[in-house]
Image (tube, helix red, strand yellow):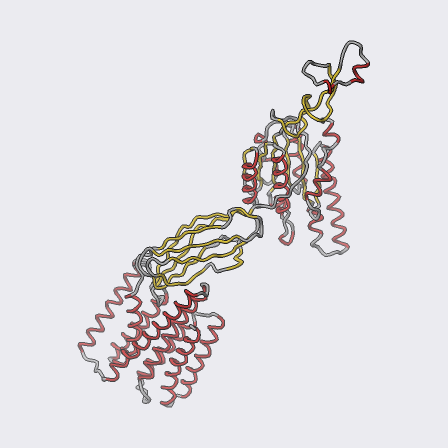
Amino acid sequence: MTLTALIISLTLGMGSLAWGYYTSGFHRLALVLALLVVFWGGSLWRRWYWFSSLGLLAAVGAAAYGMWIDLSAGLNWMIAGVAGVLIAWDLTDFLRRLYLGARDDHSRSLERGHIARAVILGVAGMLLGSIPLVINLKFSFEWGVLLVLVAAFGITQLVSWLRHGGQF
Amino acid sequence: MNLRTIFLSSLFYGLLLAGLITTRGELVALALPLALYLFSSMWDAPGEIGLEFQRSVSAERVSPGAPVSITLTVSNVGPALGEVLIEDKIPEGLTVEEGHTCHLLALKPGEVVSWTILVSGPRGCYAFNQVQVEVSEPMGLVQHEQSFATPGQLFILPPVLRLQQVAIRPRRTRVYSGNIPARTGGPGIEFFGVREYQNSDSPRWINWRASARHSQTIFSNEFEQERVADIGIILDGRMRTNALDAGHSLFEHSVLAAAALADAFLNQGNRVGLLLYGQYLRWTLPGYGKIQRERILQALSHAQPGENQVFADLGSIPTRLFPPHSQVVLVSPLIEDDLEMLLQFRANGYQVMLVSPDPVTYELSSLPDTEQVRQAARIVRMERQVLLQKVQRAGVQVLDWNVSVPFDKLVRTSLGRPPGWARAGI
């Protein structure tokens, strides 16, 4: 079940990115993204779970590049792609944990719950990310201040975590 | 927090900073799905782990290879746990025949879950110490790990062969009646001698032939008393004597022999002690009966061959552990250096029996049948025969055991009666 959901989300996520690039004329980049799906699938077969992080990094990088160059075919594909790949990345690690344990009724109900939650989060994230694009929010000074504050908070948290030896 | 969290946070902050630096809102919008994912994980971060574990083992002492079912019951007495990975740490050496040691599940408050696994393994003492628990929120980004003590133990005891009769004649016996001839006259079965008739003697004991030769005196037969004896078994666990080429070892055979002999001696009512001699000394104090049998079998289940410079030869055996003139049984493949110690034992007045699993035949069975191997085996076998003859000449009862022959069969043929020189009281 998880594997099926993972393949679907991966195909949809990377497919969205590839489609965005393809319709904007970047055929080679679209092909690379499509190949990434194949490699990701191969890594699952070989149980190289670390590859999913590489895949997510590539997907976010591709989406950011698409945003940067203002893809003509639509930026929403980029958001959808990141959301889909994020779900796939999550499910890959869940699959790893699932393979560690026994397959029984508990694991099956856990799978259902996890997939539902991942899909909800992915869809919600996609909608949340699409809102600024749909309503075409401008990057104002106030937004900048807010984001600086958020970034500062995050860095503080990171420093705190490192000072405590990786423990909160 | 784990590596995945750091990775996702880095991506999120990277996009955020990129958006800030370039003043491109689209990049910030791209970071929002990641932010939502991170926020959801932080929100659901697991709190205190309120788990209780209970382990039950179907049998605490089994024979090698016998399946044992282990049931682990988990009770969640704390808050709900989104995702729990429970790994039962099975001691090294045991094999899981059925079931899984690792379970991934979600636990509601008050929920009780249990599972059973079937394990089996070779001889040994196995302690189940802990269960490793990894609790995380459903997305697996925030994790807590904790170990829970779940004590339990499993003794896989060596198989015990039933030996019918092991005839020994130590020089000194204990006061309690038993099966071992005590070299003194008294009530018994075996003829011991003739003495003048005493009032308490049964008329059936009168030796009429001897009495007929003397007109005034009546003689009666005297029988040899049978008592229990002190027996010390020394199990040689030195790597240099047991380990052979290609990972083969005679030690399991030595353990089997020691277990069978200890069982037979205890069944005869003797007081038996066991000394494991190898990497370290492990002394099981002498005792009688079933409890002592259990103690010895448990000690044998712990026994492993090992190397220690101090105990490289048998010279470090503390002879004071064995009562003077008692019976000592050494179970060892034996090497040339051990001869001196055996002579020392004899000189100290101990009655010594050597049970020696034959390393030559054992190793030969796993080697290719070539002329060189045959020739080498002939030389090594002659060396061993010379060594065993020297040992025998010193008054040690030698049992050269080709391990392809069952030990009980060998004992039946070789130890059913004590050797002639031992019966003569040498």
